[in-house]
Each structure stands twice: as C-alpha cells, then as structure tokens.
Amino acid sequence: MATIIAPVTSFAGESIRIQIHGLPPSQSITIQSLEISDRGYLFHAYAHYVASKYGDIDLEKDPAVGGSYNGIQKMGLFWAMKRPVNPKKSYAVLSKTDVTIPAKIVLKLFENHLSEQDIFDSECITETTICRVYCDSSVERIPLRHVSSTISGTLFIPRGGEVLPAVLDIEGAMPGIYEHRASLLANHGFVVLALGLYGCPNRPETLDYGDIDYLEEAVDFLSSHTRVRQYDISVVGSSYGGTLGLAVAKFSPKISTVVNINGPVFSSLGIPIRYKSKSWVSVTMNKKRIKLLEGIQNHIDVHETPHLSDLKVHVPEFYDSKASFLFCYSENDKLYRNMEIIELTKQVFKLSSRQPRFNIIQYKNSGHVIRPPYTPPIIIAYYPISPEHPTDFGGILEEHAATQEKCWKDVISFLKNHRNEI
Image (cartoon, rainbow, N blue to C red; front, top):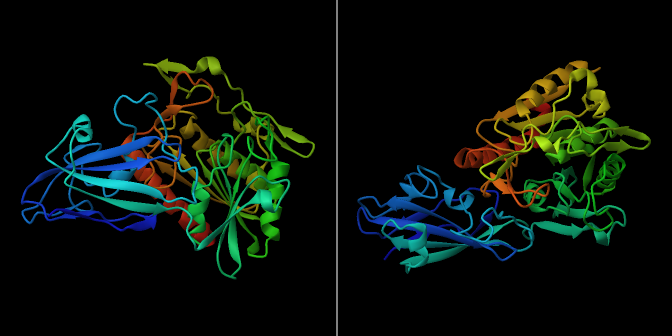
C-alpha cells in the first residue's frame, strides 16, 4: 500500500523531506499539494514522478519529470503553488494573514501522470495532511494595541528570560501589518516588531510620507523593552520599507544593523521622507512610462536613478550611520533599475566620514518581491497603481524560489554574525 512520509508539523521557514513508499516498481505517479489560503482561496501544485525499482520516491533526490516544475526540487510542492486553471483572478497571491493558525497542506497521490484538469477529476490513492507553523507556543505574539497607543504593529517575543537582540520588520508601501516574516524571524531568537506604516490602527489611511519620527519611536519602544539588548536593534525592510530602514539608521544610534531587500537608496514612489522639520523628496515618478506588454505592466522605466551629487535631496545620509548594512538586490527586478542602484550604493559609501561596513548580495533571475522561503514567489500580481492590469515583478519562477531560500539564509546569518562577516 502506498504511503506518503512527511513531518506532520514543521516551521514554515524550514525545509522538509517528503518520501513515498509502497508503490509498484517504476510506477508513474502524480503528487499534488493543496492549501486553502486565509482568504478562502484554493492553491495547489502538482508534479510527475517515476518510482524506483523498489517502489520508492524521495523528493530530495528524485527529479520531477513534469507538472508545476521539473528536476530535483525538494520543496517544489510548496513554492510552486498557484490558483487552479481558469480562476476568476489568475494572479492571486498565497499569503499568510493569520500567523496564529498553521497552514494546512494536503498531499495527494495519484496513479499515472495526470494533467491539472485530470487531477481534479480523479480519485487519489492516498493522502496526508501536514501543518506548517509560523508562530508556535515557543513565541509570544502581542498586538501592540494592547500596550501602545501610538505604535501600530505586532510584537513577537521568544519565551524565556534571556535578553535578546531585536528586529524592526518593515514591509513595503502596502497598507496593514504583515506578520509572516516577523513571526519566522522570532523563531531564530529575536524579539521582532512587525510595524504597520499605514492603513492600520493609530496610523493614517494613506502613506503620504515616510515618517522617520514614527520609526524612531518604534526603535525606542524596542530598546526600552526588558527582553531587548539595548543598541542591538536591526531593521529589516523590503522595497520602500528598506529605504525607510536606511533613513532611520541615520538618526538612531540604537540601530546596529540594516537589511535592505530591493529597496532603493533614495525615496521613490512619489512618497517623500520626513524627520522632524527636515524633508527629502522622492525622485520623479512618471506613470506615463509604464509599459503594457501583453496586458501586463512593466514599471522599470517609471523611476530615474538619481546622480550621486543629487542623492542628499532624496535620502538622509545613512552612510554616516554606525550601523552595518546588508543590501539584497535582484538582478531581474522589474520595478527598479537595480543594477544602477547597486553601482550608486557602492559610490554612496565612499562619501562616508567613517569606515563603513556594508555588503551587497546580487541574486540572478529573481524579481522584486523576495518573500520567506518556500512561499510561492510573486512574479506577476495585481498592483494598486493600476488594478485592471497585473504587474510584472520580474524573476523566473524556479530561480526566484531558490533566491528566496538563499536570501533568507543570508539575512539570518547577517543578523546573527554581521560583526564578524564584514
């Protein structure tokens, strides 16, 4: 009798091993993964395999020969998930909006190599359900509306009495509070604050400017916590959140590390940056330069990369901060000209009045949105600027998935060991 062997419970950010036993020798099979998102949408992936002469398949060693991916892809059934054929919204995104509830993934096994449509019309020969945990009993989750009237976010604290380094986690220019990365970071021994910028309690409905006073307040809140090691606070930001992480590091000596994931080193999106009485303007955002290719938007020409001599107008002088910096840039980003930004970043640190500590990691064939590992990459999705057309975020699916795994390891390693790495 065929059986699927996989851990019943695992952390969402860790790799697992899936094996199949009890098949006839050289049997052709299809294995499918299914997950209902927190918003109630069905996502799935499927792959074709051929059993060994012993009737076994090991996704860690054996290649898929068709389906949602090809080759040896140990976690392909997770990162390759998408909506089934002909959904009403073909570019829906599988995101974890409630980290207190584990993601339940059903693995189903079918005889023969089936098409996507045939899978849903066929009976499986066996199935099993596994849980992927974001926030378990080892981490305390505290919505800040219970402890702060001015900061909007969620605090994640590993249980125990030890004093720990902290992370301020900032997503891009999207409304609400995003907890998936913060909860997974807490599993690595950090006190983490997932910070909401706008469209959430205590915050404006729109993001009219990057409020560095607010970010500094969040840093001070973390620093004053009894479980946090003072002056050992990192900022991890994506896209515009990465830019804000650079800016706040200029003014807060409590920040020891900044991780900028595909964030420009200048204000963009038409959103200025403000701190007290000072302001830094966004580079020009020309929406008329959005290209529509086969119904999909390309934003690569919307922003001009500024000259080094003009940079002080668009961002605080973060390069004079005492923090260490990690820049994670995708070479196939379709929202920003990252190769130009990389060169500008290298030039920027030559202006520093101290010996700067920074590292730049480039990821080939990956796009703008780098998520935690084993999460379906966002290659194309609907974007608020023009919801009637999806936006090309760049990247090649399998290689972008590999980037998400590598980037996660790079970030964790940097946060833990940056003093010795640079």
